[in-house]
Length: 372
Ligand SMILES: *Cc1c(COP(=O)(O)O)cnc(C)c1O
Image 1 (cartoon, rainbow, N blue to C red):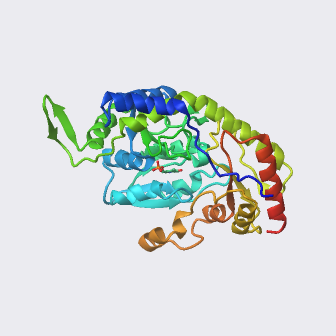
Image 2 (cartoon, rainbow, N blue to C red; image 1 turned 90 degrees about the vertical axis):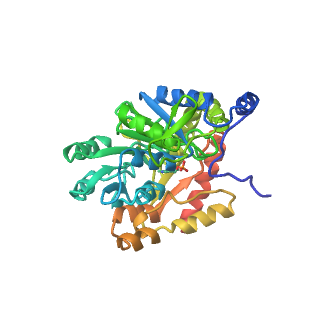
């Protein structure tokens, strides 16, 4: 008898999303329209910024923000080495240079000392990542930014609903960029959002999001070579239904994380996520760090044989061919990121998981580690 499969993640949707979509289809406004405005005001309200701009993804949100800030050739942007490549790709797309910074292993966030050491006269911005939904240690990062007069753009792709020092992720930088990919806090299938309280930046984002056009009566005047990074109202409708459920989603994810913490507390070879005082985790992913001598990939394969889907935490960029080839990085140049890339393991986590599911994952994980 084979056990039922436990997936890494399962997005949660029901009739509420379908009702919202039906309303949009009936209205005939399918491009950016009233549902986008509604979703933007819900996110701005939650995060606590003056503006929010829906985009087609977090990647386009980050790219649009860099373009709106005028970051371009000759500029350097400090990016954590341990992240999804989009964080650094957008810098390269602007013909600026992503400078990879090592992380600390407590939060998997930017290491402030390494950050400070990599600032040069060309550095313009820092993109801290709130890895897996836990805010990076922002106080020392903001101190480095202030001392060198650098712009901060938060990659908050995983962090809608995360807090640090009692404040929402997405309010620490000049802008924050969120993702609505199915693995994130809420989903629109694909989608993203920029939050900012900077009025001048907001004007520039508004212009560049939609072809660089300014509307005047019955036509546009084109002021810049803009993008089309607008979200469709059909997808925004899904986001509106999802935003209403966000508090329940986060509560469920935190409950599952609590079960993991209890079930794995005595497993010495596995370091569990810890949440520093004053922070709230979204648990976009529940990422543990295995002891260095354990074979993480073998563990993933063994769990797969047990019908449990897991994956690596995220990527060390300096060992990816594009970054090593373009910027001359060599394996191990960012040692803590490399260690996290080799030994991190994302366990299944979604709101519909039961305590029994968590017990089964914990049991099979221990069995897999015993032979890894
Ligand atoms: C998911 C993710 C992205 C990309 O988000 P998309 O909406 O898929 O473009 C960027 N950065 C981080 C840290 C992410 O986890």
